[in-house]
Image (cartoon, rainbow, N blue to C red):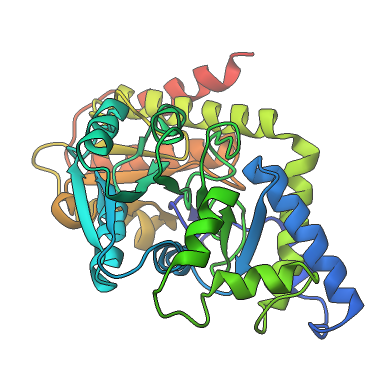
Length: 379
Protein backbone atom coordinates (compact mmCIF):
# COMPACT_ATOMS: atom_id res chain seq x y z
CA UNK A 1 0.00 0.00 0.00
CA UNK A 2 1.28 3.48 -0.86
CA UNK A 3 -0.10 6.99 -0.40
CA UNK A 4 0.57 9.50 -3.15
CA UNK A 5 1.52 13.13 -2.59
CA UNK A 6 1.43 15.77 -5.32
CA UNK A 7 4.00 18.55 -4.94
CA UNK A 8 4.12 19.64 -8.56
CA UNK A 9 3.47 23.16 -9.88
CA UNK A 10 0.23 22.01 -11.51
CA UNK A 11 -1.88 20.08 -11.21
CA UNK A 12 -2.03 20.61 -7.47
CA UNK A 13 -3.99 18.60 -4.85
CA UNK A 14 -7.77 18.96 -4.78
CA UNK A 15 -9.65 19.83 -1.57
CA UNK A 16 -12.54 17.56 -0.50
CA UNK A 17 -15.03 20.39 -1.15
CA UNK A 18 -13.89 20.59 -4.77
CA UNK A 19 -14.07 16.81 -5.24
CA UNK A 20 -17.56 16.77 -3.75
CA UNK A 21 -18.75 19.56 -6.05
CA UNK A 22 -17.55 17.63 -9.09
CA UNK A 23 -19.57 14.58 -8.03
CA UNK A 24 -22.89 16.43 -8.10
CA UNK A 25 -25.40 15.76 -10.90
CA UNK A 26 -24.72 18.04 -13.86
CA UNK A 27 -27.12 20.87 -14.68
CA UNK A 28 -27.90 22.60 -17.97
CA UNK A 29 -25.88 25.69 -18.71
CA UNK A 30 -28.65 27.83 -20.23
CA UNK A 31 -30.65 28.00 -17.02
CA UNK A 32 -31.13 30.46 -14.15
CA UNK A 33 -29.43 27.92 -11.87
CA UNK A 34 -26.21 28.04 -13.84
CA UNK A 35 -26.42 31.80 -14.30
CA UNK A 36 -26.22 31.96 -10.52
CA UNK A 37 -23.02 29.90 -10.65
CA UNK A 38 -21.52 32.18 -13.32
CA UNK A 39 -22.31 35.29 -11.31
CA UNK A 40 -20.81 33.79 -8.18
CA UNK A 41 -17.69 32.65 -10.04
CA UNK A 42 -17.01 35.95 -11.80
CA UNK A 43 -17.49 37.94 -8.59
CA UNK A 44 -15.21 35.51 -6.73
CA UNK A 45 -12.56 35.78 -9.42
CA UNK A 46 -12.63 39.57 -9.21
CA UNK A 47 -11.84 39.20 -5.51
CA UNK A 48 -8.88 36.90 -6.21
CA UNK A 49 -7.61 39.02 -9.13
CA UNK A 50 -8.15 42.16 -7.03
CA UNK A 51 -9.90 43.89 -9.89
CA UNK A 52 -13.14 45.67 -10.76
CA UNK A 53 -12.67 44.77 -14.42
CA UNK A 54 -14.40 41.91 -16.22
CA UNK A 55 -12.90 38.45 -15.73
CA UNK A 56 -13.76 35.95 -18.47
CA UNK A 57 -13.82 32.19 -17.94
CA UNK A 58 -12.65 30.03 -20.85
CA UNK A 59 -12.99 26.28 -21.29
CA UNK A 60 -9.26 25.81 -21.88
CA UNK A 61 -5.96 25.54 -20.10
CA UNK A 62 -4.08 28.67 -19.13
CA UNK A 63 -2.30 28.58 -22.47
CA UNK A 64 -5.66 29.06 -24.18
CA UNK A 65 -6.11 32.26 -22.19
CA UNK A 66 -2.60 33.34 -23.22
CA UNK A 67 -3.49 32.77 -26.85
CA UNK A 68 -6.73 34.71 -26.34
CA UNK A 69 -4.71 37.65 -25.03
CA UNK A 70 -2.41 37.72 -28.05
CA UNK A 71 -5.05 37.39 -30.75
CA UNK A 72 -7.49 39.80 -29.16
CA UNK A 73 -5.02 42.60 -28.44
CA UNK A 74 -2.84 42.56 -31.53
CA UNK A 75 -2.92 42.18 -35.29
CA UNK A 76 -0.37 40.69 -37.67
CA UNK A 77 2.46 43.18 -38.12
CA UNK A 78 2.07 44.73 -34.67
CA UNK A 79 5.00 44.79 -32.23
CA UNK A 80 5.04 43.34 -28.72
CA UNK A 81 7.70 43.34 -26.03
CA UNK A 82 8.20 39.92 -24.43
CA UNK A 83 10.04 39.19 -21.19
CA UNK A 84 11.64 35.81 -21.72
CA UNK A 85 13.29 34.32 -18.64
CA UNK A 86 12.12 30.73 -18.74
CA UNK A 87 9.99 28.20 -20.57
CA UNK A 88 6.73 30.08 -20.07
CA UNK A 89 8.09 33.48 -20.98
CA UNK A 90 9.19 31.81 -24.21
CA UNK A 91 5.57 30.76 -24.77
CA UNK A 92 4.56 34.42 -25.20
CA UNK A 93 7.17 34.72 -27.96
CA UNK A 94 5.95 31.53 -29.65
CA UNK A 95 2.34 32.74 -29.58
CA UNK A 96 3.28 36.11 -31.05
CA UNK A 97 5.22 34.48 -33.89
CA UNK A 98 2.34 32.10 -34.63
CA UNK A 99 0.11 35.10 -35.41
CA UNK A 100 2.61 37.23 -37.32
CA UNK A 101 3.31 39.62 -34.45
CA UNK A 102 6.85 40.98 -34.16
CA UNK A 103 8.19 39.95 -30.77
CA UNK A 104 10.93 42.16 -29.37
CA UNK A 105 12.50 39.95 -26.72
CA UNK A 106 14.15 40.79 -23.42
CA UNK A 107 16.23 37.71 -22.68
CA UNK A 108 16.63 37.31 -18.92
CA UNK A 109 19.07 34.80 -17.49
CA UNK A 110 17.18 31.78 -16.15
CA UNK A 111 16.90 32.12 -12.38
CA UNK A 112 16.84 35.93 -12.49
CA UNK A 113 14.00 38.46 -12.49
CA UNK A 114 13.61 41.13 -15.15
CA UNK A 115 14.65 44.69 -14.28
CA UNK A 116 11.67 47.03 -14.88
CA UNK A 117 14.18 49.67 -16.05
CA UNK A 118 15.00 47.45 -19.03
CA UNK A 119 11.32 47.44 -20.00
CA UNK A 120 11.21 51.22 -19.60
CA UNK A 121 14.25 51.56 -21.86
CA UNK A 122 12.74 49.35 -24.58
CA UNK A 123 9.41 51.23 -24.52
CA UNK A 124 11.19 54.57 -24.91
CA UNK A 125 13.35 53.21 -27.75
CA UNK A 126 10.47 51.64 -29.67
CA UNK A 127 7.16 53.56 -29.47
CA UNK A 128 5.56 50.97 -31.80
CA UNK A 129 5.29 48.45 -28.96
CA UNK A 130 1.59 47.87 -28.27
CA UNK A 131 1.80 45.23 -25.55
CA UNK A 132 4.24 44.05 -22.90
CA UNK A 133 3.99 40.32 -22.12
CA UNK A 134 5.49 39.15 -18.85
CA UNK A 135 5.14 36.50 -16.14
CA UNK A 136 4.32 36.77 -12.44
CA UNK A 137 5.79 33.41 -11.47
CA UNK A 138 8.08 31.75 -14.01
CA UNK A 139 7.26 28.15 -13.11
CA UNK A 140 10.24 26.67 -14.91
CA UNK A 141 12.75 28.59 -12.77
CA UNK A 142 10.93 29.43 -9.53
CA UNK A 143 11.29 33.19 -10.15
CA UNK A 144 8.81 35.92 -9.20
CA UNK A 145 8.98 39.10 -11.28
CA UNK A 146 8.34 42.61 -9.99
CA UNK A 147 4.94 43.16 -11.61
CA UNK A 148 4.24 46.21 -9.49
CA UNK A 149 7.43 47.87 -10.75
CA UNK A 150 6.68 46.87 -14.33
CA UNK A 151 3.17 48.30 -14.03
CA UNK A 152 4.58 51.65 -12.92
CA UNK A 153 6.67 51.73 -16.09
CA UNK A 154 3.98 50.64 -18.56
CA UNK A 155 0.97 52.58 -17.24
CA UNK A 156 2.07 55.94 -18.62
CA UNK A 157 2.66 54.59 -22.14
CA UNK A 158 0.33 53.57 -24.96
CA UNK A 159 1.25 49.91 -24.40
CA UNK A 160 -0.81 47.48 -22.32
CA UNK A 161 0.66 45.20 -19.67
CA UNK A 162 -0.25 41.51 -19.92
CA UNK A 163 0.73 39.19 -17.07
CA UNK A 164 0.86 35.40 -17.09
CA UNK A 165 -0.24 34.63 -13.52
CA UNK A 166 -1.12 31.02 -14.27
CA UNK A 167 1.01 29.59 -11.45
CA UNK A 168 1.00 32.74 -9.33
CA UNK A 169 -2.64 33.67 -8.85
CA UNK A 170 -3.86 32.70 -5.40
CA UNK A 171 -0.33 32.05 -4.15
CA UNK A 172 1.49 35.34 -4.74
CA UNK A 173 0.09 38.83 -4.36
CA UNK A 174 -0.97 40.53 -7.56
CA UNK A 175 -3.11 43.67 -7.38
CA UNK A 176 -4.45 43.82 -10.91
CA UNK A 177 -5.96 47.31 -10.81
CA UNK A 178 -3.60 48.97 -8.33
CA UNK A 179 -0.55 47.72 -10.23
CA UNK A 180 -1.95 48.80 -13.64
CA UNK A 181 -2.16 45.30 -15.14
CA UNK A 182 -4.34 45.48 -18.26
CA UNK A 183 -4.68 41.73 -18.69
CA UNK A 184 -3.98 39.04 -16.13
CA UNK A 185 -4.06 35.41 -17.27
CA UNK A 186 -4.53 32.36 -15.08
CA UNK A 187 -5.59 28.73 -15.07
CA UNK A 188 -7.51 26.42 -12.77
CA UNK A 189 -4.99 23.73 -11.83
CA UNK A 190 -2.51 25.69 -9.73
CA UNK A 191 -3.24 28.04 -6.84
CA UNK A 192 -6.98 27.78 -7.42
CA UNK A 193 -6.97 24.08 -6.45
CA UNK A 194 -8.96 22.66 -9.40
CA UNK A 195 -8.31 20.15 -12.18
CA UNK A 196 -7.00 21.53 -15.49
CA UNK A 197 -9.62 22.85 -17.89
CA UNK A 198 -10.42 26.48 -17.05
CA UNK A 199 -8.60 29.57 -18.26
CA UNK A 200 -9.21 33.03 -16.81
CA UNK A 201 -8.48 36.47 -18.23
CA UNK A 202 -9.13 39.91 -16.76
CA UNK A 203 -9.44 42.84 -19.16
CA UNK A 204 -9.04 46.56 -18.45
CA UNK A 205 -10.78 49.31 -20.42
CA UNK A 206 -7.42 50.25 -21.94
CA UNK A 207 -7.01 46.66 -23.16
CA UNK A 208 -10.57 46.47 -24.47
CA UNK A 209 -9.91 49.40 -26.80
CA UNK A 210 -7.16 47.34 -28.43
CA UNK A 211 -9.45 44.32 -28.57
CA UNK A 212 -12.01 46.29 -30.53
CA UNK A 213 -9.33 47.57 -32.92
CA UNK A 214 -7.57 44.23 -33.49
CA UNK A 215 -7.88 42.71 -36.95
CA UNK A 216 -6.71 39.24 -35.95
CA UNK A 217 -9.05 36.42 -37.03
CA UNK A 218 -10.70 34.87 -33.97
CA UNK A 219 -13.77 32.87 -33.17
CA UNK A 220 -13.79 30.64 -30.07
CA UNK A 221 -11.40 32.95 -28.20
CA UNK A 222 -13.09 36.18 -29.33
CA UNK A 223 -13.32 38.20 -26.13
CA UNK A 224 -15.88 40.51 -27.70
CA UNK A 225 -18.24 37.53 -27.66
CA UNK A 226 -17.23 36.77 -24.08
CA UNK A 227 -18.01 40.34 -23.06
CA UNK A 228 -21.39 40.33 -24.79
CA UNK A 229 -22.35 37.05 -23.12
CA UNK A 230 -21.06 38.03 -19.67
CA UNK A 231 -23.17 41.19 -19.75
CA UNK A 232 -26.13 38.75 -19.79
CA UNK A 233 -24.54 36.49 -17.14
CA UNK A 234 -23.85 33.87 -19.77
CA UNK A 235 -21.06 32.32 -21.83
CA UNK A 236 -20.73 32.47 -25.63
CA UNK A 237 -20.13 28.70 -25.94
CA UNK A 238 -20.71 25.60 -23.83
CA UNK A 239 -18.86 26.15 -20.54
CA UNK A 240 -17.10 23.59 -18.36
CA UNK A 241 -20.14 23.37 -16.09
CA UNK A 242 -18.81 21.02 -13.44
CA UNK A 243 -15.47 22.82 -13.15
CA UNK A 244 -17.17 26.19 -12.70
CA UNK A 245 -19.36 24.80 -9.91
CA UNK A 246 -16.21 23.36 -8.30
CA UNK A 247 -14.45 26.69 -8.82
CA UNK A 248 -17.05 28.33 -6.59
CA UNK A 249 -16.18 25.93 -3.79
CA UNK A 250 -12.48 26.72 -4.13
CA UNK A 251 -13.13 30.47 -4.24
CA UNK A 252 -15.28 30.22 -1.12
CA UNK A 253 -12.43 28.48 0.71
CA UNK A 254 -10.08 31.29 -0.29
CA UNK A 255 -12.55 33.96 0.76
CA UNK A 256 -12.95 32.34 4.17
CA UNK A 257 -9.18 32.30 4.64
CA UNK A 258 -8.79 35.84 3.29
CA UNK A 259 -6.18 36.87 0.74
CA UNK A 260 -3.75 38.20 3.33
CA UNK A 261 -3.76 34.89 5.21
CA UNK A 262 -3.55 32.92 1.96
CA UNK A 263 -0.43 34.77 0.84
CA UNK A 264 1.11 34.48 4.33
CA UNK A 265 0.53 30.71 4.31
CA UNK A 266 2.20 30.34 0.93
CA UNK A 267 5.11 32.47 2.10
CA UNK A 268 5.66 30.24 5.13
CA UNK A 269 5.48 27.07 2.98
CA UNK A 270 8.06 28.60 0.65
CA UNK A 271 10.36 29.66 3.48
CA UNK A 272 10.22 26.18 5.01
CA UNK A 273 10.97 24.53 1.67
CA UNK A 274 13.87 26.87 0.90
CA UNK A 275 15.32 26.38 4.40
CA UNK A 276 15.07 22.61 4.03
CA UNK A 277 16.71 22.61 0.61
CA UNK A 278 19.63 24.70 1.85
CA UNK A 279 20.02 22.45 4.89
CA UNK A 280 20.53 19.54 2.49
CA UNK A 281 23.40 21.43 0.84
CA UNK A 282 21.39 22.11 -2.30
CA UNK A 283 21.69 25.47 -4.04
CA UNK A 284 18.59 27.53 -4.73
CA UNK A 285 18.25 28.32 -8.43
CA UNK A 286 16.64 31.74 -7.89
CA UNK A 287 17.90 33.03 -4.51
CA UNK A 288 17.36 36.71 -5.32
CA UNK A 289 13.82 36.37 -6.75
CA UNK A 290 12.50 33.16 -5.17
CA UNK A 291 8.83 32.40 -5.71
CA UNK A 292 6.33 31.62 -2.95
CA UNK A 293 4.57 29.24 -5.36
CA UNK A 294 7.40 26.88 -6.31
CA UNK A 295 11.00 26.36 -5.19
CA UNK A 296 13.66 25.41 -7.72
CA UNK A 297 16.96 23.92 -6.55
CA UNK A 298 20.03 22.69 -8.38
CA UNK A 299 20.68 18.96 -8.39
CA UNK A 300 24.07 18.18 -6.75
CA UNK A 301 27.03 17.25 -8.92
CA UNK A 302 27.10 13.53 -9.61
CA UNK A 303 23.38 13.03 -8.94
CA UNK A 304 21.06 12.06 -11.80
CA UNK A 305 18.22 14.61 -11.50
CA UNK A 306 15.81 12.67 -13.68
CA UNK A 307 16.39 9.49 -11.67
CA UNK A 308 15.89 11.44 -8.44
CA UNK A 309 12.45 12.68 -9.52
CA UNK A 310 11.49 9.27 -10.94
CA UNK A 311 12.50 7.40 -7.77
CA UNK A 312 10.57 9.75 -5.50
CA UNK A 313 7.49 9.31 -7.67
CA UNK A 314 7.56 5.66 -8.64
CA UNK A 315 9.05 4.15 -5.48
CA UNK A 316 7.69 6.41 -2.75
CA UNK A 317 4.65 8.12 -4.28
CA UNK A 318 5.98 11.70 -3.85
CA UNK A 319 5.70 13.62 -7.11
CA UNK A 320 7.82 16.71 -7.57
CA UNK A 321 8.90 18.27 -10.89
CA UNK A 322 12.23 18.22 -12.66
CA UNK A 323 13.86 20.89 -14.77
CA UNK A 324 12.64 21.86 -18.21
CA UNK A 325 14.42 22.42 -21.49
CA UNK A 326 18.04 23.42 -20.84
CA UNK A 327 17.66 22.63 -17.12
CA UNK A 328 16.33 19.11 -17.62
CA UNK A 329 18.07 16.78 -15.17
CA UNK A 330 19.73 19.78 -13.48
CA UNK A 331 16.86 21.10 -11.35
CA UNK A 332 14.17 19.87 -9.01
CA UNK A 333 11.04 21.95 -8.44
CA UNK A 334 8.92 21.55 -5.33
CA UNK A 335 5.55 23.30 -5.38
CA UNK A 336 3.88 24.75 -2.29
CA UNK A 337 0.77 26.31 -3.80
CA UNK A 338 -2.92 25.64 -3.36
CA UNK A 339 -4.20 22.86 -1.09
CA UNK A 340 -0.83 22.08 0.48
CA UNK A 341 -0.03 22.41 4.18
CA UNK A 342 3.03 22.01 6.37
CA UNK A 343 2.95 18.22 6.78
CA UNK A 344 2.79 17.78 2.99
CA UNK A 345 6.03 19.76 2.79
CA UNK A 346 7.63 17.80 5.63
CA UNK A 347 6.67 14.50 3.97
CA UNK A 348 8.09 15.68 0.65
CA UNK A 349 11.35 16.87 2.21
CA UNK A 350 11.68 13.60 4.13
CA UNK A 351 11.39 11.65 0.88
CA UNK A 352 13.84 13.97 -0.88
CA UNK A 353 16.33 13.37 1.94
CA UNK A 354 15.94 9.61 1.74
CA UNK A 355 16.45 9.41 -2.03
CA UNK A 356 19.36 11.86 -2.07
CA UNK A 357 21.01 9.84 0.72
CA UNK A 358 20.46 6.60 -1.20
CA UNK A 359 21.99 8.19 -4.31
CA UNK A 360 25.16 9.13 -2.42
CA UNK A 361 24.67 12.80 -1.58
CA UNK A 362 26.31 13.54 1.76
CA UNK A 363 24.54 15.59 4.47
CA UNK A 364 23.27 15.16 8.02
CA UNK A 365 20.22 12.93 7.73
CA UNK A 366 17.17 14.77 9.05
CA UNK A 367 18.66 18.21 8.44
CA UNK A 368 16.03 19.19 5.87
CA UNK A 369 13.06 18.14 7.98
CA UNK A 370 14.55 19.92 11.01
CA UNK A 371 15.02 23.14 9.03
CA UNK A 372 11.44 23.03 7.74
CA UNK A 373 10.02 22.32 11.20
CA UNK A 374 11.94 25.27 12.66
CA UNK A 375 10.22 27.59 10.18
CA UNK A 376 6.80 26.12 10.94
CA UNK A 377 7.38 26.48 14.70
CA UNK A 378 7.81 30.25 14.34
CA UNK A 379 4.73 32.36 15.03
